Image (tube, rainbow, N blue to C red; front, side):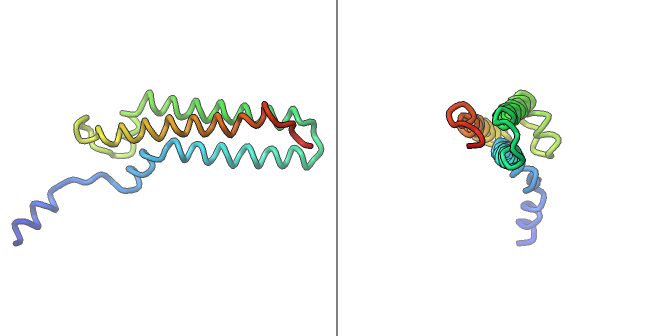
Length: 124
């Protein structure tokens, strides 16, 4: 029985927080972008500034968010290494597939949340 426990303890598991940050990176970026555009939009409209400032802030925040996700996708091996995920591609294949899928869905969500800047008049 003790040999079995030693075998299980020898298996290296990736850190939970690093794995969650890696898998949910796109959603984390989208949530920051979503909060930022609504916060800036509310502040700009509350102080009575022209609506173009709110629309510009939405576009800038969205471009920055998409850029961050695309850069993370392009450098996912470095991101995974920084988060101490397994280095071998076979051990990380499912993580990478989920990372890419969630990142692509997050880019779609960012584009959807930014679309309001082009459809609805700001500060009405």
